[in-house]
Length: 268
Image 1 (tube, rainbow, N blue to C red):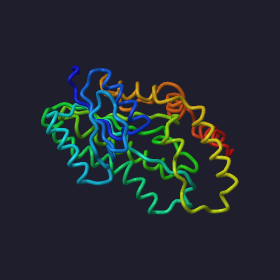
Image 2: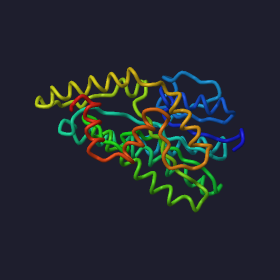
Image 3: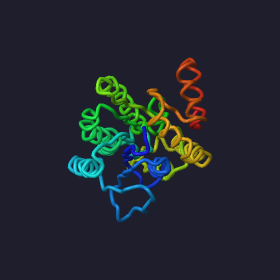
Image 4: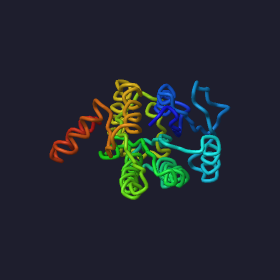
């Protein structure tokens, strides 16, 4: 792809999305970054900000139409916008889970549905969906979030089979904990069940420690750029812990993986 490649990155107000938008701009791409409020977002050289709320179908439609009106095409779509939730499954309300899925799964679906017609028409495109190692692993006290990422992975794999005929491919990037505000400031389920207090406390301590010791967004951003421009590969866990976890899940027996995961979260 040439320097005139048009890239759309959702959720660029901070963290991975912001770092990815900057990296694409440095490569000479024309980059559109979506945010819920331009007024509350610091500008970025080389990145054109567009207001879009992935939870609002009309907002998504307006934003994609505006981008296509200016650029005439979209070559790469990076679905990065997302949110997290901490808490036991029993503590998670249906409303909290629905709101999480509305952003992480349905929000991605809304954007894909608006962008795909233009990619089909130009017979090319790459859709990069930012998942997580929790898209293929469980995570105690992050069950709703893990479920949303498992759903995103199923959606992405099915999508890729459907759009290959049009010259379009879908790719998953699967980071582990990253030192970003999304991981550090993840909300907790509003209702707590006392029976989980002791174990949940240990798990939260473990999660906090993993975030503090996690790498910054650079490795994830490199994986996103590779997913956009490199040879197609369905899953791209960034180098380091994410890549190791991917290999363990694939090649290790379930028992040792389960025991290792429980130890990692401080519950076994």
